[in-house]
Length: 157
Image 1: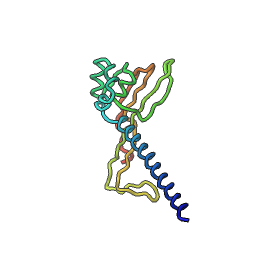
Image 2: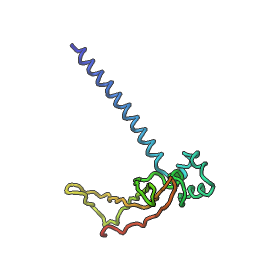
Image 3: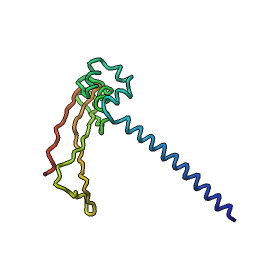
Image 4: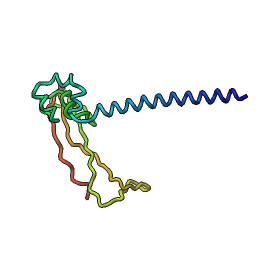
């Protein structure tokens, strides 16, 4: 009589082990993706030396400083600025374009909180508001335009 209960118990344990393995693989994959997509130009260069070596010496110097120029490739911009938060397809001057938008998160000035997030949601942790900080437009895989945007004024403060 106890055998069916024991068999069910062992099946549940085996399913829990499998779930743990899947969660572990997902966590490792997510961490790897997070650490390879962000960071500094130096980190991206050290992890992708083959891309860096293909650049001209002029572009290598700029990328090392986190700067870009008109005419750079998408790979060079990625090494210098990282992965954009948005990629916007477009069309300009008779050819397809792609614009990369980079966001910055800014905390507005506070007056000691608490901060209001909704009818039942208060917090002493200040909110961070995203805003575009820079953008670059490519045509035929090369930079045709880029711009650093100013920090917006505080939201009504």
